[in-house]
Length: 360
Image (tube, rainbow, N blue to C red; front, side, top):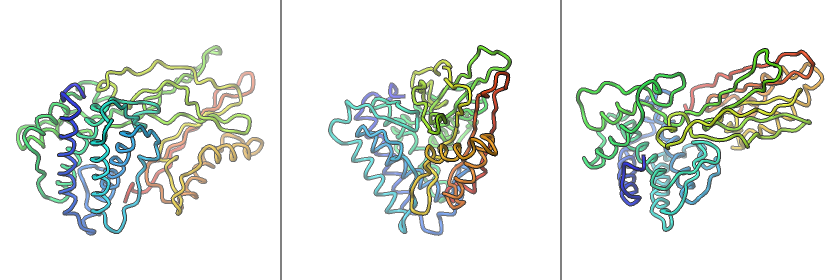
């Protein structure tokens, strides 16, 4: 993507124009508007603004070399949502314009653990996101979005760089196939070409051998949080697994999906897979769910009776209690346990927690 815009100065200027237009549109938002639906199927305008604010803060932190995933977490809106959004926009614009940005790599934890991107490429991601999200806000409010022809030409080039074909029809694809466009504005064409509504779909692929005593479970990770291994009454992240960007960004970043690697589980050990809806669940005081500590404690309680097979269900109940029943994102837990008897099969249990409306 960064090859389509010739310089960091150019992409930073284009991004600033997109962000300033998003601020202009958001100034029309009233408290009553926050419940409006948006073109993003899972978000009301309230949820969309929370997402946009979180992305501003995350990219601003990344521009300074801060790769802490906590910087990307959604935060509650205050009494004045417009002021909240303007403050976040001002922060990211100042961050991108700061001295020294040109030579930095941006750590983008939402793209995958440990992944970094050159400044121009990272800001290009932010640029196209806020062109499209400005359109989302405009459509929700019933007002026009205003961009210069030069900006729209650059944004269309970025949108058209997204690969088409089978990659956009496969299950879990980050980008849906382009929508047919036969008229309307250039901005409508950009949105039709993108038609992804969220670029950062992560995935883990786990290969569980069937009947081959010498084969080991293998894993491929594309932007997903690392699994947690429960052993010796403790919990350890398997953060040595090679990382890759989310599915829809592999072609854009010039990277390929890594080869499967062994999961390195010993008999009797349990691997816990989870989505970020689990690790980002918060209690009433804003504290995130302490997954490693709680998983280790509950696994220790279940070691004898009724058994480790109850772990996903017990963790789900514990998670819901922590969040006081108010999960703000999908939460999925899956356990893979290697049997510790000589002829036992691998035990797999999958449990999905059905959340309430996200960011309602």
